[in-house]
Image: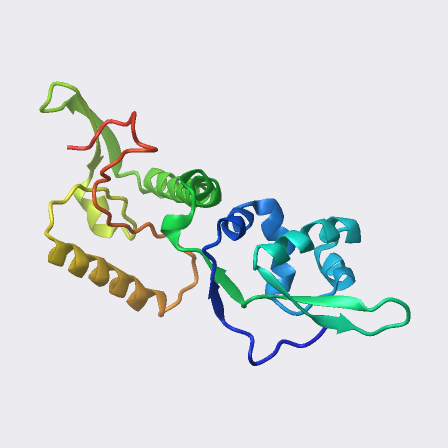
Length: 221
């Protein structure tokens, strides 16, 4: 292996469809990772991945042709010289709008849902331990059903957790200001540290023009 060069770019944008297809294929992405860390030969990359040299040899020409790695010459040794490869940058970036929708879903939704499930486990646990909450069932104004959280005032005053979803009507300036204020607030508290890890969910987004995942969902009021 060869040490990283100071001239190695921090980022490179990938817009070629072949490169995007490989970056959004988890099989190919695993074989790219060692080359984004340092220079490797076929043998050293296989050792890093704990995979066979044959498996790595299958992917190297594809990564080269897609412009994700580059050939940096050969490493002299007894016998045949070993080609050396490195990623075209320490980080490769694909513009979000160029990632096919199905690949976005496959790459991102799994991680999003894992964090959401963990958050839901935590909020259910702490609500149960608080003994100050109940589920209220009633008619909704549109004639359907409403299920709401009924909160004891004393429990509300003492709680250090929250779970709230809302529909707001905002102009562009207010939406920008709210998003920036929320991020600044989170950053202020994140810098303090503390003994127990908390899971935070924070988001603000316009109602979608096209409802892909949510096509069959009921819209909130």
